[in-house]
Length: 292
Ligand SMILES: NC(=O)c1ccc[n+]([C@@H]2O[C@H](COP(=O)([O-])OP(=O)(O)OC[C@H]3O[C@@H](n4cnc5c(N)ncnc54)[C@H](OP(=O)(O)O)[C@@H]3O)[C@@H](O)[C@H]2O)c1
Image (cartoon, rainbow, N blue to C red; front, side, top):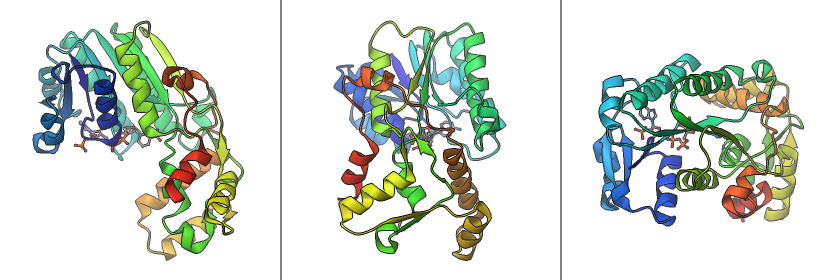
């Protein structure tokens, strides 16, 4: 039995879809959900549900009973980074107690000097989880996922086509953007093929791109000029505050933009291409699919 956590989420849903496409029978797949009702579409496909919450250890031990392979999808908790680490550690301990044989964890990409990056605390949480997993004695595979291509429209602004401007303090920084679905497909590959025991993989694109390049590609696709402006962080935050954007989102946009400016997410790698058996979707392809 393979259990996918975060099964009602976007990545978990796709990971399950790709397991099915790779020939895993629905009766050999289970999804961890927080609310059974939300998992009905999975049940309709013949996939069993286990109910569990990362903050409730006993719910996880119960949910992981009889599971051989676990895909632990990292939490989307927006609180302090320590919350995230604590939830992941709960899941790893529960997997150990439930005698799970192999745990595959969705981590996040980082460079050796990540501590200085704008997303250092977030990356530290993943690094701490990886360390705990390695020390747990469980057989593990770590997937260091790159930043989703799907973040581009959110960071570029919902009205970019109308305004003709991307304003983001990302400077000329590049990121190795990847399609969420292709990361999920790679996870399904790892879950269904041999030789991934106690390995750590960087799953990013083999070509990085900057917001300047995003603007160029958008201009080409739309047939109208889209400018890219990288204002000072204070100026950026003041304009979003004036536009009535909630502080939580201003914080998130600023943090990601600064991390991109620092090159913290610019880690090109060919592993994803080898797992997919093809070149991953590029930023230019994603933009033409999104905006054409
Ligand atoms: N690489 C990137 O650029 C990037 C971007 C965003 C997020 N991420 C990370 O990748 C993960 C998967 O991405 P996604 O797009 O699938 O996110 P998502 O759509 O928000 O899904 C997150 C999943 O995790 C579940 N979950 C969250 N907190 C939980 C908890 N305390 N206990 C049990 N389940 C919990 C959610 O359950 P509910 O459906 O009940 O809420 C949901 O199924 C995210 O959670 C985040 O850690 C990566």
